[in-house]
Each structure stands twice: as structure tokens, then as C-alpha cells.
Length: 217
Image (tube, rainbow, N blue to C red; front, side):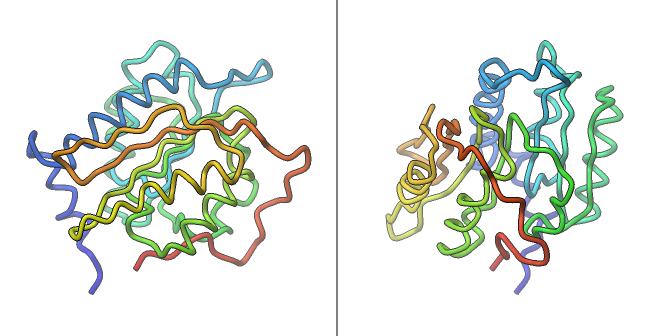
């Protein structure tokens, strides 16, 4: 059965919900990332948000942060209602450099001709795809993130106590990322990680067209 993502987003409106608490951590990490991410002397910094929802983790932070309004942000969200909410929010916050695309973030064709970003968010992704797709996606991030770029990601532990986030952390390390922070509240299932790409190959092959990084399950 397909998950109702509009209903899922309603949990953000409950201040003490796990999702609302996760949002607070993601926004905190994004504020830090905006300060510590590399700068581009030849143009504005770029941000990509995969499966961006209505943009509430990104847009308010850009609006409040020094230099946030100069960031070129690409938000990719498949659900047309959520993506339209993100467009409306960007306009309301006076953010002129936000590109919201109603598209499949798991399809490599979505990223054709997109420049690598200084910041990338993959929130609400890894818990909805297979382990193999998680590994494939992290391996492909070299094509989407510049050297020294920062990735913020989320994952949750399961009801039986297993915590797949440690496997995600190990996979990031395997692919040249250094951990900047990892938040794992004892009284909540969510986990939020932040990694910097410290070992990027000198030559990075382009994203292969017509394939997939991941599919939601």
C-alpha cells in the first residue's frame, strides 16, 4: 500500500512528535552546515534536497541565515501537492533562488545537467528504501556533492531495537565521507547524521542516465 505522504507530514504539527523533534535537529545541523560548507568563488553556493516534501526543513533556515538568500537550492519532490506547498513557502519567505521540481528523486535522469552541490539533504529517504538502494545512493553522491560538501541525512531505528543508522554511517565512511555529527536520542527512534565528503575522486563519472538510485518500498 502506498504511504499517504500528506497525512505523514501532519505529524510535524505536533510539537512533541518524533518528526517535529527530528525537524529541529535537521534545521540545527543545516544552520551549522551553512556556516561550514565550502564557498564557491566563481558563483553562489548550491543546495540539493532529495525527497524534499514541503521544504520546511530547508526554506525557513535559508530565510533566516546570513547568506541563505543567496543559496541556489534545488528541492526535488514527487508529490505535486507537497512540491506546490514548497513553491508557495519559498515565495512567502522571499527566497528568489529556489527551484522546486515535481520529479522522482530516485531516478538518475532527474539529475542530468545539475551541478554538484555544496550541501545536500537526504531526509526521510533511507528508511523507505532497501539496504542495497541505500548503499547505491550513498555511492552515487560523489556525482551530486562537491569536494568538502556536506550531506545531512536521517534514518530511524526499528521497533525490534535494530538500529540501521550505524550501517548508514559505515557506508558513508566507506565512500569517503567524514562524520561531523550524529544525533541519536535515547527516547526517540529518529537519527540524524551529518557527513563531509573529504575524499572525492579526481574524476567523477556522470550520473548514469536511465537508471535508478533508489525506489521507495
